[in-house]
Length: 305
Length: 325
Image (cartoon, rainbow over all chains, first blue to last red; front, side, top):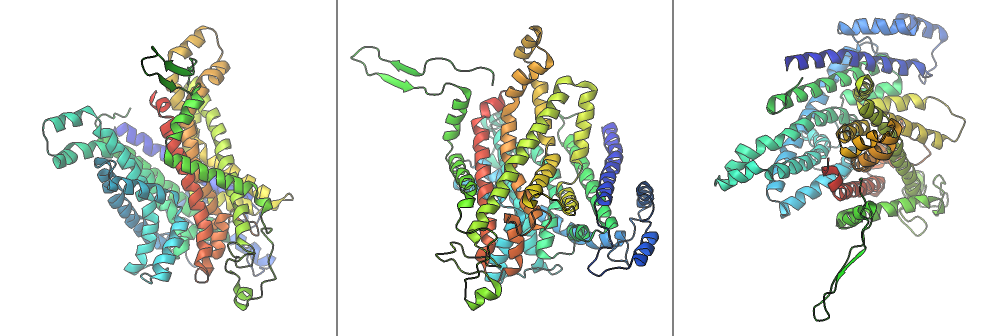
């Protein structure tokens, strides 16, 4: 098991190198540069800026310079916000995105999993059909559509919550729900399918035949086995929450990493783009690793070579 | 999907004139017919299929729409409408107009063309690449397998949406001489297929690994079939079931992805209509016309939901072949 973990951690390095290389190449081969703004900048100023930010050096040298700095934690200066470094900007936006993702994950898990379990244990009942309807409907609605519908209904018509911003509790409601309900629907479907699967198995029949109380049955036997596929899917779900915040942050004007990335792309702020993309790739890779390791720990039947 | 049912179509057992005859028509004669029969029993899947066909039909006949999608209607004289658009639905404009007084109904139809084209084309191309890579990896194994699968892992390590946005934004900078919409749709399809072929490849590889131990493959080898023949005639057709299910469910995902990048401004650019870009345009006009925002959003929702229903129905219809592994 330890060998597996070590191997996976070591695999992170080529992955990050690959991602950074591709991102770097993409940014530098397309026309237009970071100094293309509405205001025309004099060629002399551009030349000076390029020298200052090492943009006049050949591409591979720039790449090596960037990576060596990045390994020390310095992701370079931002081209748009010239008084701050990328690291500072990212650290500024990170708490917002993390809290958004955390609460959305909470919503997704606390709504999705119990709903799935209840729906499966009471198959073909009203609860089951509601859960299935919820699962299908909310899985088909993209987050931006759902966001707008919720803004229209809850903010503009009913005036229950504000439409944008971040910081006050009531501003959390809509973005968290928008991001979380989608994943909750997915979790409902997967949990329900998994519970149905486990329910049919022989050991459950035995436990029931022995006369075990239904509730104890669920807790002691059903959940532990049925939740295994759910755990494996939580990794991609968490990754999606991190990435899906891109759109939700744009709609609700939340100052998080997603919005930073989108802005950085439109303003061609190279270091910001590189920094955030690397961060995404790193976090997703680590999340997948944690989930895989957890999977191996939870299910004694799994052995890693 | 190896065997075919080749027996008689009609089972009728008339014993003697005194006894009642039991006639049971068994209509299905081939696997496709069996799958269709199973699919037909799913009410939701049939509703989804009907809806999807309706959307496809309506989008195909978009050129017959009453208005051209980019035509600004200057004949509207109401003060409000001239100031900020969004004329209410009327006889001339069935769904009303957008902020520039272009007919919403026509724009929705034309936007549907783009979304559907992106969805189906991406799945087609992505699945083809995936089948190709997965087949090679699964059949030949060894170092080819390792190389291809590690390559797929590398592709998978890119966070989907940020990379999609990045590449689309980069490609947006280029000016092309040909028709902009066609070029943009092509690039979107290309990028999505490039980021989406891995799942199919994994599926195909897994199927191949299971199938290689089956008797009919061993028999084919013993009879001297070469690799290409085994793959094309035996292995790939028998792997199609999970691929079809995964592909049908992915269409919805790609339609959403195209809407997402158009929403963020790096997909199809104005004045071309796309459900996502329409949503982005209407974002600032939420207070004027809630209906306008709900229309493209509703269109996306209905289309994707129909596709999901069809995908679920297909999964249940193809279940015997999926479980046979």
